Every structure is written in structure tokens, then in C-alpha cells.
Length: 240
Ligand SMILES: O=C(O)CCC(=O)C(=O)O
Ligand SMILES: [Mn+2]
Image (tube, rainbow, N blue to C red; front, side):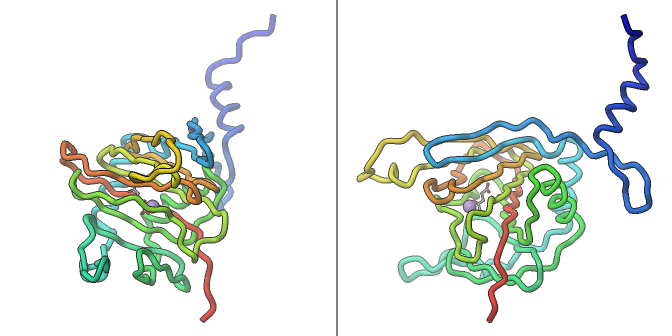
């Protein structure tokens, strides 16, 4: 029988399997991808995983709270049935400089990337294999802040590209509802799918999820602490 491998040798072999060289030739660990849960339904195709451990997620949340600059309330008001309404959350947009993005009828020019957002964006890319050029950030001060049912189907999005939704802070319910199963005159009965999006988590929404399923973050009165959500998107540069 072969002698058991000493633990240091085992650790070194494992590190070599998951390591790479940085720009100066030093060895940097490349982490094995964290385990992921598949969320599937009729036209629903998502992956959910923890992207940051609790201590790292705490640090990222603190940096987001210090460094993200939110748009003033007047810039994010929505025009519904002839009246302007403040949205029940704060919003910020960051991304590559040439991009423009229209969300709920309002066009945004992104702020340039900042290091904490690059850090999250790089982690998302290393785990998903996708590079994103734009992020919409929503800050919910407590469980009264929310977002209503909608699909992420803006015309500026690269067709069939996934959306990577990263959450920090309070764990909140996130509800998917099939487009044919909404309202009193629903054509079909398809059960909604509710997920709990935890601190440091990544929900990757893949095509065709946003064609068939609406999503929302409902009010949860018992939630007393803030949550920050970042949806990384691939936006097309539109020639003017
Ligand atoms: O906060 C969330 O989890 C969802 C945000 C969202 O749906 C959006 O920004 O389009
Ligand atoms: Mn959305």
C-alpha cells in the first residue's frame, strides 16, 4: 500500500491545482468555484451561490456604504399615470464611460468604476466566466424599501446576455412570477418561485429567464437593516 501523503504535500498539491501566476510571476490562489444551486422552471434558468464568505462580505458592505455615490432623488423619480413618484430605494449606476442605459423611462450615464466595484466585478467574472460593463446598484434602507414586479428587458442589453445580481446586507425574499400567471385574469397557474438572497450571494439570471419571468423584492416589515444589491449587466454601446 502506498504511504499516505503528508498534509503539507496534500495542501501544496491542492494549491497548485487552483493557483495561477500574477503579473510579477508570484503564485496567487485561484479559488475553486463555490458550489451552486440551479433554479429551474418553465423558461426559468438561474444559478445561486455564495460569492463571498461572511467576513469578506462584511468588509465589502462597509466599503460600499462608504464609497458608492447614489443619484439624487429627483434623478430617479418615475412618471406613472401623469404623476411623478419617488422610488422606494436609492439607486446608483457605474460602468464603462461610453454607455447609456434607460431604466423605467430614465436615461443614465454611468459613473466611472471604483475599486470596490472592480473587486466584485472581477469575482463575478472569475466564477461565471462573464465580463460585465455596467452595474445598477439599489440600496434598500430597510424592509419598507422594495422594487415592484418587472423584467430586466431593456433594449440596451446585449441580447441573451445573463445578469449577475450580487447582494450584501439584510437577507431578503426575491420573488419570480411567470408572465402568464400574473393578475386576476392569469392564463395559467404557475407557482411563483421565492428565493432568499443572502449576504455575499450571487444570483445569475440566464437567458431566457427575463423573457418569461417577472421579479420583485417585496416589502418585508420585519427587516430593519439595509441591503445593497448590484445587478451587473452587459450593455451595448449605441452609436449616436
Ligand atoms: O434588489 C434586487 O435584488 C433586485 C434589483 C432589480 O431587480 C434590478 O435592479 O433590476
Ligand atoms: Mn430587475
